Length: 151
Image (cartoon, rainbow, N blue to C red; front, side, top):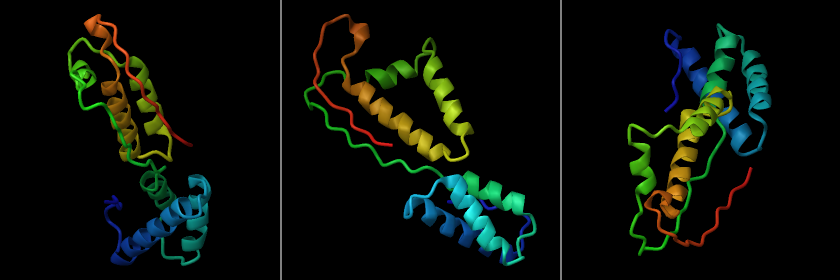
């Protein structure tokens, strides 16, 4: 669901929606960088002379058109006895995820990353961490696995 700015005319709302779809297709289908796609879209839709605030239109596109993340697929041994240790640890009051917190904030400040994309990374990371041996148990464990990703 896209968040179109309030107080726009019905025509401008339609232009914002169409501009979003066009810009998103440039990024997703043509693999264009988001900044370039926003500029391309602003130029194309600006020619219509129906957008009251071009800066607002560009900000909208930067906010709504985002880097895409594929859903993660996890395969783990069904006999794992401690499948939620990481999730449980994250919810303890003493847990301080300082590195992740900084990286999370960094990604959110990038104009090309939406909260959804960042949350997808967060949940994928949690899935991987839950598949590892819990180091707080003090028991040696061995788990084999592989993490695969691309940029």
